[in-house]
Structures are given as C-alpha cells and as structure tokens.
Image (cartoon, rainbow, N blue to C red; front, side):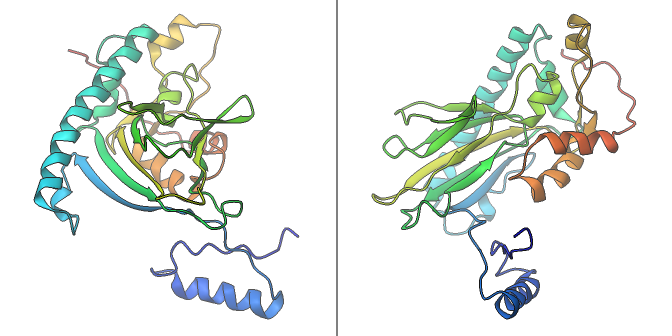
Length: 274
C-alpha cells in the first residue's frame, strides 16, 4: 500500500495546479481511490514586523486594526527579547547572547500569523493544523480563551493546552534547541478541529533569527558540559528554512542531520552582548 496515491491540494490554485491535476487523473485511472486529507483546516494571514513591516500590504484591514497591530507588535517584540534574556540567565549565558545570535546583519525576523479554525464536520479525518515543531526561535501565542484545540506531545501523550484569558502561551522553536545543544527542546504540537461553535482564533508571533544569522551550539554551554559533545550542526538560518518548509510536518531529527551534511564553514568571532 506504500504506492497508494496521497495528494496534497495545498497548492491547487497555484503554480502546481497542472501537476496536481495530473496526479488526480492518474489516481482515477489506475486506482479509483485517492486520499487528500494531508492539509490543514485553517484560514490564515501573516504580517511581518521585522526587519520591515508588511502591515500596509495586507488587504482588507481597516486603519484601526493596522494601528493596533503595530502597537501589539512593539510590545511583543520587547516581551520576546525579555524572555530570551531570562533563558540566557537560566542557561548561564551572558545577557543579550540569544538576541545577538538572532540578529545577523539586519536584525531578527519577527511576524504574526493570524489564524481562524472554523468548525469542521469531519474532525477525525483532518486536523486544524498538523503536528510539527516550529522552525524558529521563541513563539508567543494568544489563543482563543473559549475554544480549545491546541495540544502538545509530552512523553508520548497528546496534552491539551488550556485556553486561559489574558495569558500568552510560549513555546520554543528548533533554533533554541540547536543553540542550547538540546538542553531546551522544541516540542511537537498540533491543533485539533472542532465540530461546533464559532471556531477557534489565535495570534501566534514568531521571534526568529535573521535570515543570515549563523546558528550553532553556544560555546559557553559546551564548555560547561564538557562531558556532553556537540550534537547539533552549525548553519545559516535561511538554509535551515529552505529545508524546513517542505518538511515541516515531518520529524525534526532528520532535518538536523541533513544540516550536518551541509554544515557551513563560517568563521565565527565572539558574540558581542554589549
């Protein structure tokens, strides 16, 4: 059954339409069956805040929304950087270390994904958002305070993340796992579909390294844990993202291994923190 046709409709209205139609045609001719549930039951738009804002390029937003989103982004940017410094403190790294690693030549990348997960008539067949880890740095999530759906994988079990009013869910991305040499790990999570109600809303803000930032385990951590060898590669964040995008919904470990095979030869000086 490994050849059973599974067809993603994600880009059916884009450049891959002809190829997808051909796959459907082959499945109809040769099988009479095919599967298309490899997609997500969500509607989204994305606003980038850094290095340059795209808020004015997003259509159908009124001026008050744009104004509030800009204020929202400034506050979350500050919170993300404060949280990174708290991580540094816990890890025994110099204050500002993570922020500087993320900076690259032009600063970090930071943006917000606004998502709506409408009621789904077949939640057993399709997820609101399939299981994955986040590629970047630190993620700040405002989730719906009335409708649940977010789950994380802990010790082999899917655990509900409770919706709490006036709270922010924080999760760590793959880059934090690399920089801490696995001391802090990115966690697999998903959104399950709901059958009734008005659906679920969320705002997820991603504070990530700049595209040219070089990511690698912090030398200070390797020195502190001399018995623990460096197990993660060194790479440019943009290269990791090129690998991540088509493999987002697969295990992260093969991604790390693949980056080892193309490990960058960048000469690294000390990270300035002042």
